[in-house]
Image 1 (cartoon, rainbow, N blue to C red):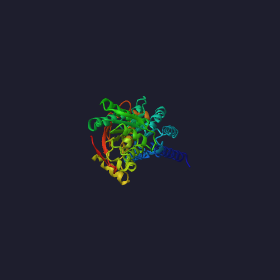
Image 2 (image 1 turned 45 degrees about the horizontal axis):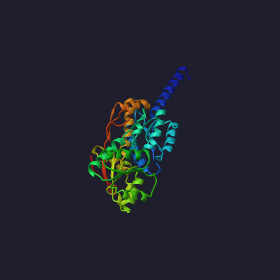
Image 3 (image 1 turned 120 degrees about the vertical axis):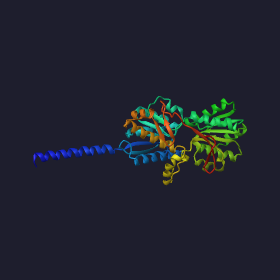
Image 4 (image 1 turned 90 degrees about the vertical axis):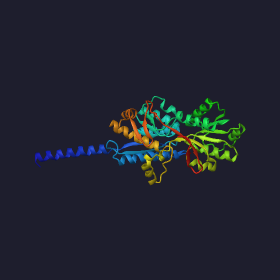
Length: 374
């Protein structure tokens, strides 16, 4: 082989190596951790989050991905338990993933967010509504859902102006989310001089509420607000009907799950619940609804579309910043608006949405719901 031939061979080898390296870099996926309850009593909400996030990833990848890279979901189960959420957050750090959609329960999101912000990981929750989450001064924590301080007044205004109860009880599950939203509703009732004769917590997982219901009957309560999730609310409804306690019940988005009808049966008829708008009924989302239905999935869950939006704004911010650095992506999130299936989203300095609306619905025993406010 001549010197000229050897030079050409080396040149082609170098070009091939550069091409292979460039292809490898271009093909490296952007991993997004999906952190939430895969197991446990509120796993249904984790299913909603995963459903929305995975659909967004599929749609974005089909359109070419982000800056030449495909998105890849990695699922982690925190069971909506704060201690397990911390373990999950540390595993995500160790796995080298720098973007998270989740966590779902506020009690899990808050301790996990401390780890993510310290380790330079960007997190967007589609479900955690506690204001404390974004009041810690973190710069990499966002959410695509409203706050308890928005949801509580929506519920309170409806109760005050439409129901006008004579004697109210406000209950909660002693958890950050449940007690937080219950406190916000109690404040609205207090401001309207509606007597709250009972403000009390129940233990998550309890199944016998007979003593509590006897107390509600004794206090002649005609309205009950419960801050928490559907397993406890379902049992409260069912046992209230069995004990002939007739009051109007209301809860936050944590009780707005079709499983509550399975638990409470006919007793769930007429329950009031605050939920995000029914994004699945928006005509502009018809193509997504069809895509969900093609997979035999139900897109009506409260966190499906907010989770879709979380992935979309994350991807859009990567495109705008032309970066996969969480700090640069966060800066793009704060300085741009994003047209998503849940509306045009803009974030404030804390990472909260500038605008978000909750709607009061009347729940029906068949799992359907009727909007009572706009």
